[in-house]
Length: 235
Image 1 (cartoon, one colour):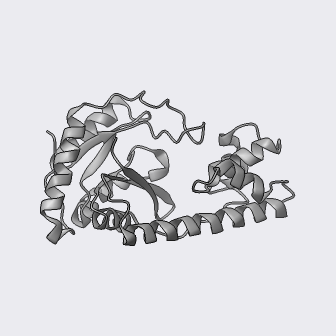
Image 2 (tube, rainbow, N blue to C red):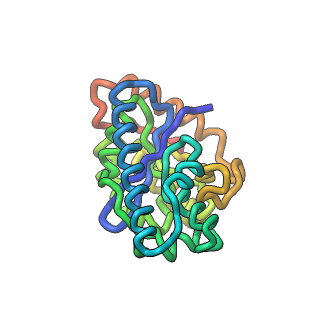
């Protein structure tokens, strides 16, 4: 099992996710950063619930917290509360009608750039990887890869449920050109929370794990120059 983290960031109107593999998550500065992120998520979720209540939608903060079950509170938990209140039938409908970016109860989260997320992961001793670049909400994030590489990006999530074979081939080529490690996954969040593909349903070459560990070792060796990334390509 590899320790990891997924950090949500924003680029204009687009949402970009950055993965951190093999992070030393017990480091105090990283825990402080995650604490600030959690506090921001809670404040945002509370504000969304207040907006829903102002719209006459009977969603209670206590039910949202119950769905989070002690974990980080997010919009999917609010969506489940909306389903329970019989205001929507599915998570997708909750986002489309109420809490998505164009919804009447949407509240933006505290802003964080992908570059800042990359730097936080590097400072925690991890390998920063751009998550699912083909995800529609991420917009043209692939055009930003050279800039992210300058900040220390070390990989791209190539294998993903929504990536077509043509997209996979394209992202593999991007990884090769920029010396990035190739990773993959299902984006599984458990319990039906914003999850469409079952855990383990996406096939990832075993060489990706080997390359990921080698990249982590290379980054450790270059810790004195954390703003730059080694060549982590598996090609």
